[in-house]
Length: 246
Length: 271
Image (cartoon, rainbow over all chains, first blue to last red; front, side, top):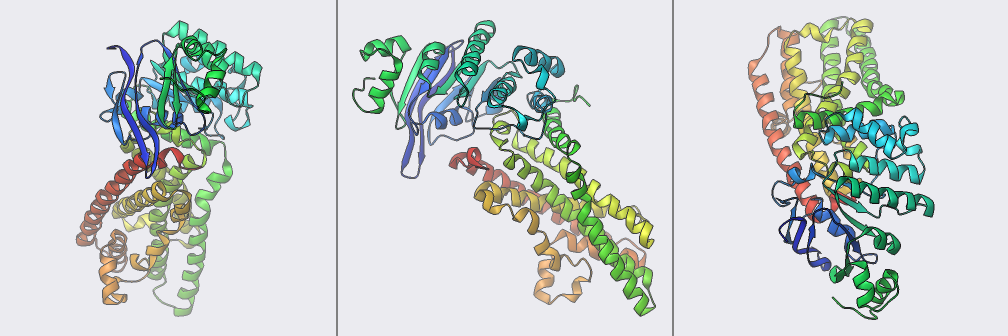
C-alpha cells in the first residue's frame, strides 16, 4: 500500500518485563477511518503515543504522512493533530485563548478566522470567552475537537473521543466527525471502547489484545468471520479467549 | 499582538509565551506573587542596612550598596531560575504537556519560550523592588553604571542553567522533584558570596564558589562599589562559566527529555 497515511512495521514497546505492544504492523490508507480496539491494557494508548512521537518504540518503524517518525517527526506533527479526554487544556485560559495558543503552535494562517469558523461549526461561539475549566464534559470535548482541527490536519488521532459523554452528545460528536471526514478527506485513527461508535465510523478495525494484533478487517467482515451479531460480541470473544482468528 | 509574520519557530515560541501571559492577565494574585518576595527581601535588608549604618556611624552608603545590591541582584538569579522552572510546572499542573509535546513545538523552542517567560517574570518581580530601594533607601542599583546590565545578564543565564537542570529532574522524577523549583538556588546562596567576599570562605569552599557565575558577579559588584571600577576578569569568568553551565545543563535537559520519551514519563507527567 504506497499511499499509506500511517505505516507501522513491527512496532514494539517493552517496559522492563512488560510487553505493552508486540510487533504491531499495519498500513492505513489515506482518507480512511480506522479503529484501534482492545480492552484496558491492550496497547491502544501506547500505540497512539508512539504514532504521535510521544513515546519511542523499543523496536519497529513508524512512517506518518511519509515522514519517518524516528527522524524529523515535527514535519509530520505539523500536519496531524490529536484529541483525548485524558489530556487537558489549561483550565484558566478561555476557550478562545486556548485555541489561539494552538493556532500559534501550529503556525495557522488567519488564526482568528479559523477560530471563528471552528466555533461556528462546533457550537462554541457562545463559550469562547469562558475559562476551559468551567465547561461541561460535552463542551470540553467540542473544544478539544476544535483544538485538534485548528491546523486542518491531514491525519487525526482520537483517543476515546466520546468517553464520558452522554448518549446524545456522543451521537452529536460522531455525526459531526462523519460530516467532517466527508468534507475534508481527513484520515482518522481512533481508539475506543465504544463498539457502536467503531462500527459506525470505522472502515477498518485493528483488534489488539495484550499488545498484539489478534484480528483485523472491516466491522462487517469481523462480525461475519466470527459468526456473531455485533462487533461487541466479537470484542467479547477476543477478550475472553472464546475464539481468536487473525 | 497576533504573531503574524513571525517565522514558524518564532510563532511557536510566541504561542507558549502567549499561553502564560493569558494566564497572568486573568490572575492578579499571580502577578502580585511575582513581586512579593523580592520586595519583602529588599525591605528586610534595607532596614538591616539602615540599622547597621546607624550603629557604625560610617560607610553607610557602601554598606547599603553591598547589602541591597546583593539582595537585588541575587533576586535576579532566583527569579530567573524560578520563572523558567515554574512556567514549565504550570504545564505539568494543567496536564497540558500531552498536547504541547505532540505539537510541532521543538524542545529548543520550549526552552526559548520558558526563557522568555523567565525574563518577563524576573523583570516584573525585581524591578518594583529596585524602584522601592531607590525610593525608601536612596539606593539606585542602576547607579552602578551600565555594567549592571551585564550583571543582570550573567545572573539570568545562571538562573536558566540551573532551571534546565531542575526541569530535567522533574522530567525524570515527576512530582517528587517539584520542590527543587523553589529550593535549589537557595542552597547555592552561601557559595554565591552575595554579601561577603569569596576570600571569607574556607579554601575548599572558595574553589566551589569560583565555579559559580554568581560569585564572580558579586565580586565584581563589590569592586564597582568599593573601588569604582569594573573588573573585566570577573565579568569574563562569569560569562564563561555561564556558557559552560548552559551547555552542560542543556545537554542534561535534552538527554532527559529523550529518556522520558523512551520511558513513557513524558506522557504521564503530572498524573
